[in-house]
Length: 415
Ligand SMILES: NC(=O)c1ccc[n+]([C@@H]2O[C@H](COP(=O)([O-])OP(=O)(O)OC[C@H]3O[C@@H](n4cnc5c(N)ncnc54)[C@H](O)[C@@H]3O)[C@@H](O)[C@H]2O)c1
Image (cartoon, rainbow, N blue to C red; front, top):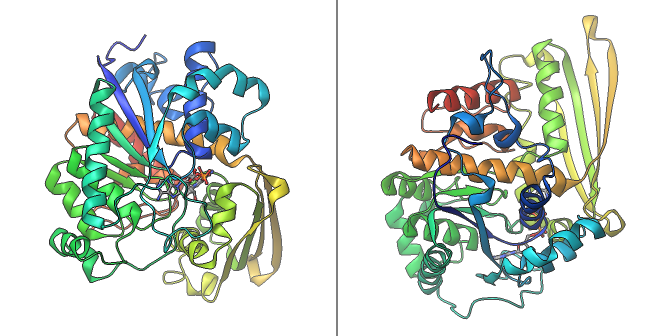
């Protein structure tokens, strides 16, 4: 039993109730009602390091107990988590049947739609407000109504919506004042993800960006989080192929082996894959996935090993694969005297099965940060992201060992 378990419900609001959100919610419910092991969740299974007695993080930190979590959200298509889970096709028939009654109670409100950001989805459940200021106000009310209605003592907002068409952050994203002025003039460069994040902070809730959408890349939003005294973390879950890539990349870099080229490709057939079939939406993934090797195979420090290294990332929408993504990496490396070698990685994974425990951890850890009064970017959560946002003055790293050490340090400090 979690001795430090906090009383009261903790709301988890999923902006986008798709494969990742519904798989996470179903897994939490199966852990609660059927005692299923929450495989992959550090917040549930992780042991406190350096202690003789075997204690888990949940024994020493005021992490929201699974029983305290209540779920809600919005979506452009799905009306509840049961429908979302059926569409996603991640869970087998037995798990769907075992959770369908609960998932049907997790309702999704209508979402903010801008076809300039997600063109390929039939957005049948868009909110009626058209102006961005009205949309912002509507989401502030939506969050407050959900958390108050569910009787939550605390709450977190997770951005789990589709990947949006990429737009580089500009002047309007520089300060909160510039951002609000852009909202007021309905500037098309203000994305739905940014409105969702801003509204959450305005309503008083911390935010985790599980998508590659530029939210923490907008200084205006980070500054607003600091001003509101709320934590924020992101971006883009590091679940499968990129997780393996950062482990192997760090291993090659630490041995000072050279790399001529790294070719990554994958096929997937879920709705995420459909949206990524649009070049502007793929661009967002290309940015978060493309940068992960930069500090691991550092061409500035070691031009003799990595200068001119070719790094390509491709994603192909292939419906027969569904959520069971298959990823290949072909790495051309070289060793002593420049002799060449080849390394191949073939990961036949399940995208949302890998992502679900990360999302659960992030919900509980950002809630922990909020309880501790931590404001602004929570870079100690970098291990969870492909594009880990740094705090001002920090240099972000994609080295999982460094990232995990930072996470442990922070959790131990809050013990
Ligand atoms: N599945 C993974 O393992 C994984 C890993 C890393 C990152 N991600 C990212 O997480 C996000 C969610 O992935 P997923 O697999 O659940 O995708 P998904 O397509 O199954 O779910 C996304 C949901 O968001 C909804 N949506 C889209 N735009 C919206 C809007 N403006 N407002 C409200 N709802 C909106 C869609 O209707 C859909 O139901 C994506 O950005 C994806 O790239 C997923």
